[in-house]
Image (tube, rainbow, N blue to C red; front, side):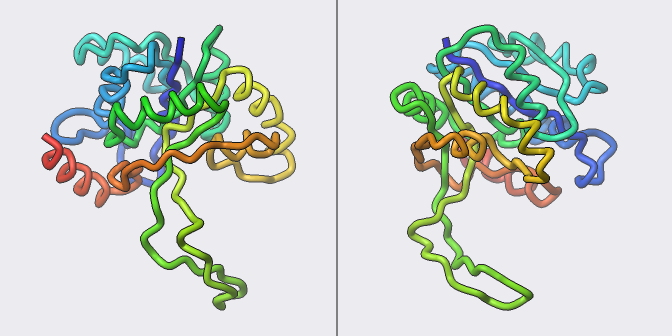
Length: 228
């Protein structure tokens, strides 16, 4: 059995809205529902654990039935950081072969992309979705260009990020120590990489954007209409 953790535990304070951004409408449907629909159509995901702000859990309860999200098995409260929210979702899983972790505000991932990463993780232990870097990337030190990085060796980390269940649990066991040292944990692969595990990169589409501001909603609306 393969389980997805859809992480939507953020409060959206940077977005400037009265509600967390994952509940804002995208073409008249909440962003989180768009995201969950992709996992509903995935052939490799059996059940979904949704991680939400505690204050939003009650309001979410009617959405799985309303939108026929039959794979949603558990809804749990998030933590103060994304990593802690993932850890809470992980604690709700009793058994699984592969766990796929996905940002709730990435509604444009496709079921095929989800399936590709899950299959790669089942075969190799760990795999994440990445997109090519289109811009030239500069490393900056003291407001000056220190060096230009080789673009062909870079990729933007997307989600889902998929791992064998026991591996991801082992990686998250070290989270308290890592956070105590002041290191920011921005994705799950970072924790797995620290164990010395090779993570397979699966190339995905740059359309799989993370909605962080109002402009992203406008872009996502256009992309959704193009995909119909």
